[in-house]
Length: 376
Image (cartoon, rainbow, N blue to C red; front, side, top):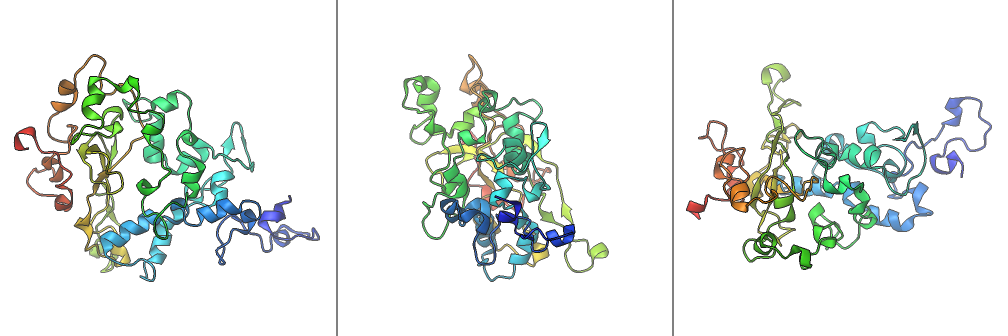
């Protein structure tokens, strides 16, 4: 196969300049064209092309569904497609950006594998140059133990990479959705689950901790509640604050950005997709009523779903602050204080730092709060 097989350009080798050689060149031949085809891939990989056409990776259906829900709008034909493509759509990937180059959203170019840069086709994407190049600020940092005070995920310590849990079918699209496509990553039937490798029915799980917290009616805990380390939370970093004196009457790209905080929060399960658990790890989604104001998009459904959402941090350990060797649940977890340093999401977490002003998303999140034992 020659370069022109995929990239097209001058095919007869009669050119004399680089400009002539590059006439008609297709820089990313694995992107969908105007006909909805990936000509460079589907001749040999038709099944994968058919699957990825509706995958979350390719189309960002999850982001679109969130905009439709909070904006109470139909995205297609809304006029919001252009700003979405400019600001959000750059995160989607093509076949080549996983299997050959680095993703365009993180600068593109050939990945450095070992000591050299390569155009090599890789059946499995490189964890550092491709997977966590995009999924780095949370997943990569967690998995590699790069947060101060944390260890690398136990699976990372054992040398495992992303493909241990995240299969080809999950990433490309497994086609098991109801309707036209999945709307959320936690809907995906082939998504990884701890139980795939760690069966709670096995003898090793039969102890006081698991008998009390796993599968027990009304107190079935997500595995990460005990086995995740602290992780980053964001608050209002997508809060658009237009400064009319500087930018004029039209809102511009000026955001009030608060730094992320390292926390650990447990809440009542708010997920409509992972309903098997009663209590789960929750992470704050940094959406604000003004997030899309520069699009002209208000969010009348801003309070229709929580902003403290189900999460699954990639920083698993057998022993964490909540599972100390020889310790007890009561001392390690049940006696946690209220406030930002406590493990439980409390009503106080839904207030401004003054302790009296409710945050804009208070009403959306009150159902996720775990009330103090005295109030139950």
